[in-house]
Image 1 (cartoon, rainbow, N blue to C red):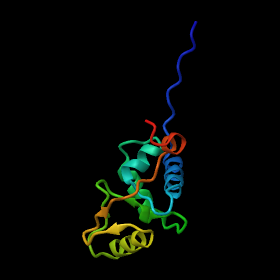
Image 2: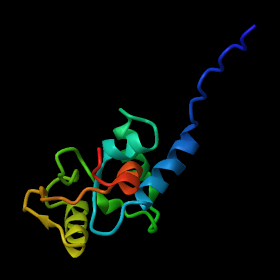
Image 3: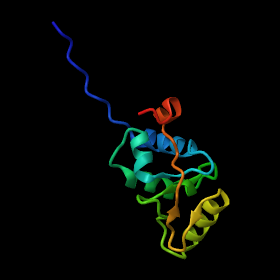
Image 4: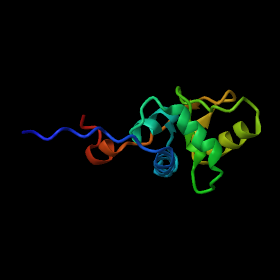
Length: 122
């Protein structure tokens, strides 16, 4: 008789927060990732808003929050807000060209594990 399959265990919010912070710490200097890409990397596709919430509540200086942007490679903060100005300055200091409206021009994507292992083979 076959053993019944176990249901997949849903991660706790605490575990998801840890995974999200670690994924963001893994974005190398000079690269960016979107909220959705981070969510997908930690196994929570469609939870981009959770990534944004974790970042807004984080306050940790060791998390490079400025490397996470909204879909379309755009800064999520309202234009000319303190957060917008700080994120734009940090991105520019890492070599990104950021327009006045927060659009990152020719953004360098943070590679995922498959790209790191296989390059652009697939």
